[in-house]
Image (tube, rainbow, N blue to C red; front, side, top):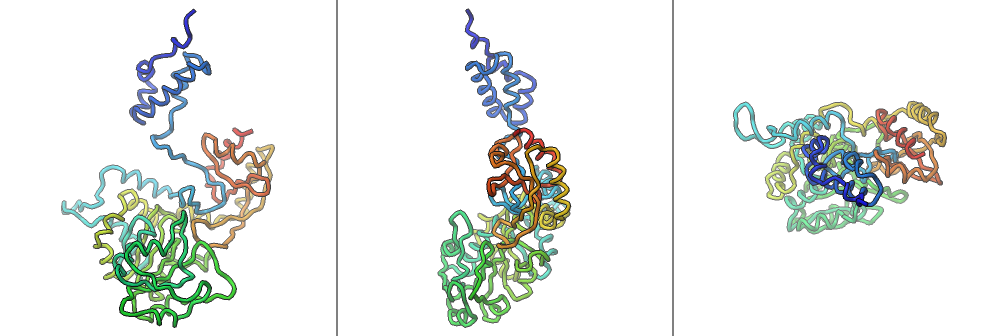
Length: 425
């Protein structure tokens, strides 16, 4: 009797299938061959018949050539670091696609000569923060701070409050980052209280700059005191302020979150911020401030190692100049509209309930700020099943229930969310 395994189609025959040939052109040979081999193995082990191998290989193809999975963020955390922080706007996504080929990123089409890299993005940021004498962009906010240390304080001192020597995530700490620049940290004050005189007494000929770091991922309350930017600006040395989460202007829902425009108006020499948090753009480190200092930063050899690519520049410009990004829409989402969306989903799900909850800003921004929200409540075992789905959905588990908070789910994703839940039942 013929061994049925001998009936499994050969690899070359399968790769000639028009569907798999088209996939090879789109995804590359390695990924398609992997799907073919896995389907053949399933047939050899008796899981599928030999004549189903081609169909199984097609079904096993990835959507794209990357292993990154697009997920629905139903956690209620607006800027979720583990999910890539800020989702880009449609305008920013379109800009990335347009910039993926050859672009004029460093080329002047009118003169045919080389031009300054990212000039349009720099101009957009300068327009958004007119108080900035100049603007520069690096690959993240940590890089912005490191560049400040390298240029302004290598072999010198950075005066900083002890209460602002924070850990910024994944074990990285501001003092260690700055020490890597060759600067020495001159710590002043105590963990909970610092006075202007503490800074004044620490400043000397070795001072490179005074640093103020916004504690964006925690709050210290009670018997506390800090020194404001306006007071620090009277001391003489440059004042560098890390505002963290990337607001360019004040936001009515976040009165305690510093912004670039206000901080510069208070007398900061230089402001650093993130592009992928409350600004709602791609990962980037933003530097606003004194034109002479920014130019020194831009011309330092390390700036080359920290520069951003054309895709980031395109997305950042589209975020600043374009329509409201998703993060801004999530912050201002109407609770009653969220409730309507939840009810519409719950009516179609036998196991779901409406649950009033609170969302968080996340991403190391606005600690303690709670945003009233509404979630679809499911039995807790749905959390894992939804994460493992064809279109993964990431919720959160509270008190034995899986909550899908719609504040962080775009309305266009509601139907996908529903189908994901139904697939788990």
